[in-house]
Image (tube, rainbow, N blue to C red):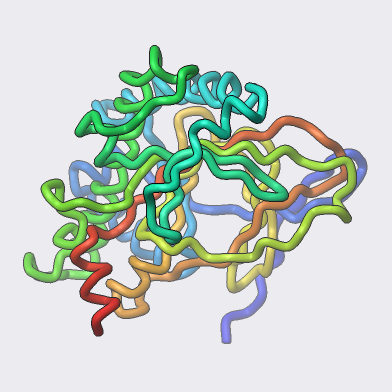
Length: 289
């Protein structure tokens, strides 16, 4: 059993808060197959399941995402600050219970998810507030998708998978999937004690996440639960999902986490999440197994 490593701490509003520390891995180096970056990626994915992805540098994919991330935050704010009745027009009734497309709301958050397949095919029905920003959202979504595909290819290489075993075979460009960009509005509350427990793992393959306020409590085997600092400018937080854990035969770790807050205090809080998910053929095969 690994020894427990105490996380570092920070002080927020006079309270000592445990802070997780994760490795930062360069997208440029993964794109070029730089061996030490690939080895560090594998180490992160097999141990904690968490790492920061540095999008800066001479990567066309990274440049697109960095250029658009602030715009997507603004698009989110414009959308979620609408009256409730306006957003309810975007509820989707034409989807499976397992899908999250369109507008959804719960006791703690509001979300709007756009499936990449629908965005790229032009089949998506954009909300009125997003119609002028559709090119930005499509570009950002595709940039996040290609970054995730780079990670998948690097992990396949690190695990010495043969071409027919590659993780990419379950995420082919010509096959439909539920991969997509989800905008999330989940404000923090006046009292920490009022935050409900939402402990979970992500069901997909990889999650690429941007956020700029404390709000994610992540589990690390050697540390327990702690709050990862918001990604630095030009970086995103990545975690392995259940599907990738399954595809790897349990070698890669899908970590538990919850949306929370370290201290009392209500404020706006947005998350920009790209969920890479397996193609439908893979999920159908699993359902029949």
